[in-house]
Every structure is written in structure tokens, then in C-alpha cells.
Image (cartoon, rainbow, N blue to C red; front, side, top):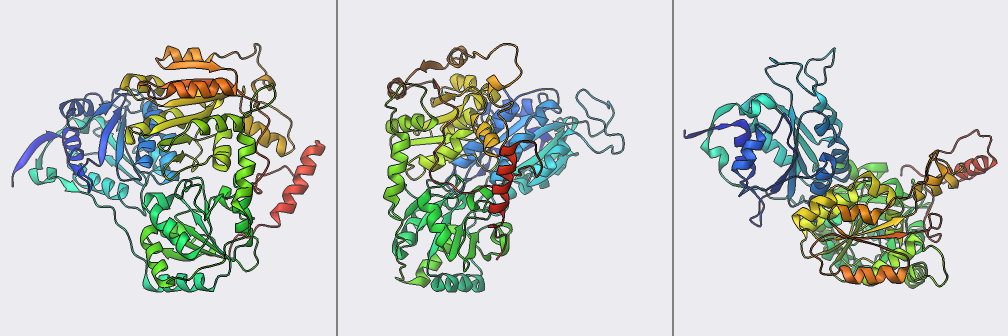
Amino acid sequence: MTTIRLTAAQAMVRWLSVQMTEDGNRFIEGVWAIFGHGNVAGLGEALYAHREVLPTWRGHNEQTMAHAAIAYAKAQKRRRAMAVTTSIGPGALNVVTAAGVAFANRLPMLIIPGDVFANRAPDPVLQQLEVFNDGTVSANDCFKPVSRYFDRILRPEQIMTALPRALRVMTDPADCGPVTLAFCQDVQAEAYDYPASFFTPKVWKIRRPEADADELAEAIAAIKAAKNPVIVAGGGVIYSGAEAALAAFASTHVIPVVETQAGKSSLAFDHPLNFGPVGVTGAASANAVCEAADLVIGVGTRFQDFTTGSWSLFKNPERRILSINVAAYDAYKHGALNLVSDARTALSAISKALHNRIWPKPLWLQDDWAAVTAGVKAAPKAAGLPTDMQVIGAVQRSAGPDTVVMSAAGTMPGELHKIWDAPVGGYHMEYGFSCMGYEIAGAMGIKMARPDADVICMLGDGSYMMANSELATAVMMGLAFTVVITDNRGYGCINRLQKGTGGAGFNNLLDQSYHVNPSHIDFAAHAGAMGAHAVKVATIAELEAALRAAKGAKIPQVIVIDTDPWPGTEAGGTWWEVGVPEVSTRAEVTAARAAFEKHQKLQRLAD
């Protein structure tokens, strides 16, 4: 047997560089790295030697590097991914939040944190956590709850089993998610005679599981028996590449489609059967159809509470849930009739069995909702601070067919879900975990995945303050995207929720907090100091002019505008369960609790 003597780190990097996709690209496009003790000597040396075939990028924060990797994988529809390596202590723990993002959203990412010495000779080493009752624990054990697969590399030969397991998980549509390979720092530098065959290029194919015949027959029978079916399109439609299949299915059988946050842009906003966003941040058109539906056909959705109105939305006493999902865990939720299958495969098989069967189109007119959204997005006619919806309207008017709008937390996810008109593939929202700080790094990852796209990142001042350092990285990498910062001087979204549940305005808006000096942050100056082209505008007209000027730029463009923290789109939406105190001295809380109990009675948790 021919062998090659390499360190474990060299072997890992060499192996990753020859793991390929079906279209001939590397599955792991590159590695984000902040070096420290624990990965600089081993992995750092190995990555340098392979820098021409496996790129290494350096960010400014481990968490946001990982956010960029997550956004890249999402924009690539899980067909490609990135790796992230860190040092052993705080650097590793900085990635745990991002691992939660990838875990919740079922997105592939390879995390390679350095770890303590396997031989334990120098213990305790710098940044090592010592657990008094368990000598096997390190900081990296924190990754276990947020990893689809976790392994600790204690000997150099162990990568020959751990790496294939890692890629198996990352390319499995049912089990997809982040993988953590905690790499002991002494082991990274140890040499081993690896079989040459271990480095033979391998093509990883994404499976399309077909439905069980009995499950498929039950699903078809349920659809045939339905009088008012509705399709809830989730992110699985996009990951399956089933956008065209969904459009054909809906058109052939005249079944209305509503979209979750992850599923938005799986069907063009102006498709005749697209009834809009569903749930708490949904359109009146979509929610009206869902309330009347006797069969709710979930396609690639995990039925998150924002989608279901905490399971109070689907009000028809006769309603049933049919869940089509590649993951059995999701397909079996809430007593659903389950069809474990790839979305595109399932839609094709069901459509064939239905022949030319059609259902009457619901009477609720999408045009009514379009008129509502046009009204809230229109430019203001009076003086005063614009609303976030008016800012979205300005961005919408500047958008083209190649625009991808993205966000993650605060006001923007709800408003964009409700009122943004998205073409197919034109919407990217991290709302599985709703992680503040994802936005700018995420925009960078999208631009790396889709260099020809016009990427527009929309976020509030709170999210910008949470994590903005990768703006400097994007400048250095020459990645151009547009950042629109709506400065409402605090956490406007959660402030509205606080007031809506009867609470007093407290600790959310900056002028409500116990600060000695008022906040006067110059976001444009800050972004400009990191190398971006940044301007502050005062009006919607100035915003539209700045958006036009940003077209074709070679570096990130940042536009800051002050907005009113109070208004939101009142139309549409449905109830969302938030625990309201049973006892309070505030009359507003008591009233909110009464409303809470009334809505809670509408919940239907299982069929």
C-alpha cells in the first residue's frame, strides 16, 4: 500500500481540497480562519501550503466569519459550504452562537476549533477550561448541542473516519447541519503514514429520497379528498431546487401557495397562485386562505410558531396537516399525515397522480393585499421621520431582477416578509434563529456565493452595533453590496412587543435607558472609517438617490437614515404566543393577559 507521510492538519486540508460537488467544484469552497495558539502552528501551516487550491480568508470576529459561511451555504442551496477554524478558547466559543444559527436553519458548515493537548502533558494550557469532575471536557463541548455531528480528534489517524462522517452529514438533505471537529493542537502537528487512496478525489452527490409508496398513496388520497387545500412553502422547496416544480404544481391544480420566511421567493411574488407570506408576519390574503383550509400541505417547512400563529391560524374544524419533508423529524410534527420525501420528487409524483384535477381558486383577492403593501411603502407626503416600511419601499423601487434583499433580526424580518415583493431567489432571511449580527457578514457570504447579485442588507442600528466588523473584511476582499441602516435609536421591534404585551417602555430605546449621556452615534462616519463608502440621508428622496448612486460600486455602500421607531404594518398578521404575566400592578398587562388567554383557547396543537 502506498502511503504519504503528513501531519494530521496537512492531511485534513489536503483531503478537504479534493472533496467535490457534482458540478465539479470543491464542496468546501474555502476556510475562514482567525489564528491563535491551538490552530496557527498546525492548521495554519497546512492551510498556507494549500492556499492556491483551498483559499483561506481572515475575518475580524469568529462568530461573524461563521455567519458569512452560513449565508454562503444558504445562498448555494446547501450544495457547497465553507469551513471555519479558531483557537482553543474564546475564539472557539465565539462560534457557538453561529453554530446555533446553522443548526436551526439546517445549513452545512464545518467548524474546526483547536483543542487542548491530547497528551495532557502541559495541562492546564492557556485558555483551557478545567472541569473538576471530568477530565475529558474542554470548551469545545459547548458545540455538542448545536452540531449535527461532533468529534474530537485525539490521534492523527482518526481524521480518516471523522472527515467522511462530517461530509456525509453536511451533504445529507435530511441530516444537514453544522459539524464540529475539535482538533487537539498537539495532534494537528503529529505525522502519520496515510494511505494515498485517502486523497483520491470524491464526488458528493445530494440525494433525492423518494416517498414510500404507502405514504405517497395516503397523501394523494388526502389531497383528492380536500375541498380547500393550501400549500405552505418552506425553505425545503428552495434547498430541493423545487421552485419550478412548485409553480407548475400550483398552476396545474389551482392550489394557493403561501410562503414562510425561509420559503419566501420560492414562488414569484406576482404568480397568480402566490397568496403571500403566512403567519404572524403574514399577509391578510395568505392567512385568510389558511384559516379556511381543510388540508394544509406543508412542503419543506418545519411549521415554526411564526408560520402557524402558535398553532392558532388553521381554524377550519375539518383541517388536516400533510407534511412533505425530507426530514422525518419535521414530517411527523403535530400529528401530521407524513410524506418523507424530497420536495421536488414528491410534488412531481403527486401531480402525476392528480392528473388534471383542479380546485376552485379562493375568492380572497391578492390585489387587495398588494394595495395595502403599496400604501405603506409609498413615499411620505408629510414632513417627519420616515417609517421602516417607507424605507423598504424606496429600496423596492430601486431593486432589479438580480436584487437579493437580506436581513435577520429586529423590525426588518417582519416587514420584509410582509411587504417585500420578491422574485424567485430574491429573498434571504435568517429567521430560524433570528440572530442579531448576522446581517453584514451574511451579506458578504451571499455576495461570495452569488457575485452577480445585487445584494442589499437591511438592518437597524441595534444589529449594526451588535456586529459590524466584517464590513472591513468585505472592503479588503473587494466585495460590493449595499447596507441600509435604519436608525430608530434602539430596539424598536422589541419595544413594540413590550408595549403590546402591556409592559412599560423600558430598556429598549436608548432614551428609555439609564444613560448619563444621550446616544449620538455617527454610523456613516463609523462605516467610512472601515473603508466603506458611507452617507447619511435625511429623506426618502435622498435615500432613493443614494441607492441609485450605489449601483455598480466596487466596495460596500452604506446608507444611514433615521426612522420612526413606533409604526409597523398593522394589516395582516395573526396571533403569536408570548407569555404575558398572570399577575401585575399594571392595568395594561392585565388587559393583555385577558387577550392572551382568549387567543390561547384557539390553539390546536395536534390533529
